[in-house]
Amino acid sequence: MSNSRWQFTKQSTTDGVRTITINRPEQRNALTPDLYRELKEGLLEGWADPGARMLVLRGCQGVFASGGDLKHFRSLLDGPTEERLWQIARSYEEPLPFRTILECPKPVISVVDGLCLAGGLVIAACSDHVIATSRSSFGVPEARVGLADPFCAVLLPRVVGDVRARHLMLTARRIDGETAEQWGLVTDLVPPEELDEAVERVVRELKQVSPDSTAAYKRATNASIPHMSTVIISDAACSENGREGLAAFAEKRTPNWT
Image 1 (cartoon, rainbow, N blue to C red):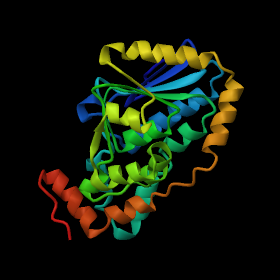
Image 2: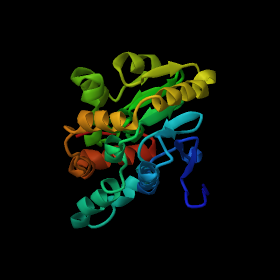
Image 3: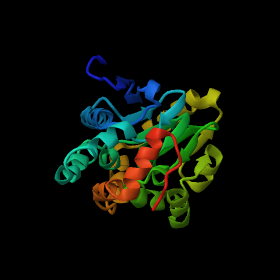
């Protein structure tokens, strides 16, 4: 498969595995609407491809995804006030791949080797299997810049439990790979040099089960997940503290919360 279509990802299908690699290493794989759209499009193609038994999402060494590109996000707040909600919804609702991962009838594996933050953590939380290295770290840093993530609020309690989810969101604390495994966010934790071997092992295991059984389990497990609205994102971002948090991030200073 040619990669000429893909600007921010690398995509290929080999031996029944559709692999989608996030490819913005200079920006630490920061997630933009265009990058989200490529992920979603690749997932949908893998969903429809009868030759793909499963989908694997990867980053690069040192970072899976570091969260949303805040430079792009700030640009959405510079327009007319009456257009902000629409602009945020257009940029961070339709392109997002989260629901596609949940509803895809095929297994989705996230392979994490390094930072997995914010939107990257949501991708992992949606996935059916998360393989991570011991040098990986996970977190929900939005509150440090005055933002809020409705996707984490809906998905994380299902994965790690209410108390731990609230702790991650309210403190913006990062946890290491070992803690993430203990909390149920990571299914396989391995040394970095054993990562590819672990991915191959999980792929073999998943190929041994019925695709119809996989689809049925996913449909039943994820059917109760509610809609996740971007209104929460816009409400936080457009507030006085939201603007202050984003400005402080850009200026590399401590926010002055009101």
